[in-house]
Length: 105
Ligand code: SF4
Ligand code: SF4
Image (cartoon, rainbow, N blue to C red; front, side, top):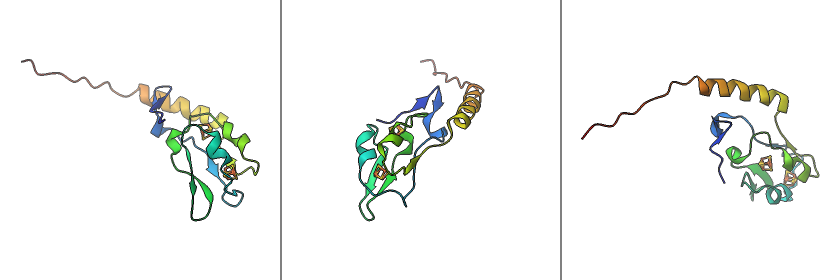
């Protein structure tokens, strides 16, 4: 299920998603089974896991790290991400509100 916004910030503005170290990934599929949000996809050609839908990943979630016994999954630093989220929230809140007027009939 695609997440459209987080804390009022459009999801596509938030740089939060897993990274997979393809040298460590053995294509076991455990992370794919673990995450309910269709973030991952196994690339058949090389049997390596891909982050196919990064915007489906819930910001600040890193639970699937524990599903990988090869330690192939990593995430951005959470403390840094908190600062980024604060900045993004300020940006979004500072946007002008656009009013749409209907033509009277
Ligand atoms: S759990 Fe780890 S090793 Fe298995 S497919 Fe996912 S990233 Fe690759
Ligand atoms: S961090 Fe959470 S939402 Fe993101 S891929 Fe892992 S389990 Fe799925």
